[in-house]
Image (cartoon, rainbow, N blue to C red; front, side, top):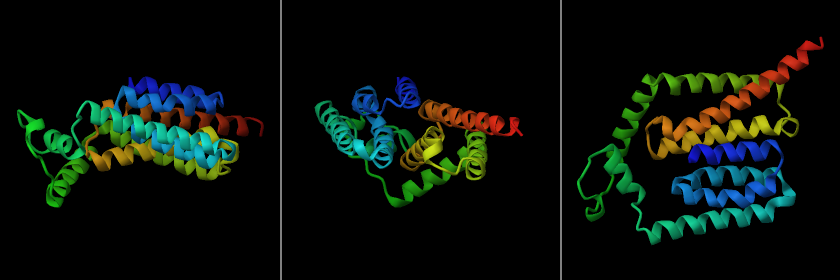
Length: 202
């Protein structure tokens, strides 16, 4: 479902249907509350990119936040510390009844293990190499942001979401990143097609 949300964003942005994006993104939080990260990064970028839609961007962001808070309170969802501790430190049979806390040393230990595991994850490493190449090509062949909005947006949203998610939960589970892997791949192919078109006329 998260992949579907990201796919909808890609489709709507490719068609320049920004109003539709601002309307539909708050609903993504209903799919999974952690899509609030995606909403914040995407909407903030739209806020700076489209000056005439800043009010709608703010409304969309506030709506996303209200839905997020409402769902967490209504369903008594676990907080970040509980999910982090239960998933990455120690599993307990009744996390809702235990006051789980995380020390700085606990987080650093998990982060260190996460980085080591990430370096062993060939899909994640491939993404990093792939994305690094794209950024270099962007600098040389598509530096002007206004003329390459789609490529830049997909690249920035992809990188920012994976970075934020990894800082919050130092794991490279594909189910969390697959949508952003696809988004960055689309950006790379768009860039390559632009480069090929440019040099095919020489």
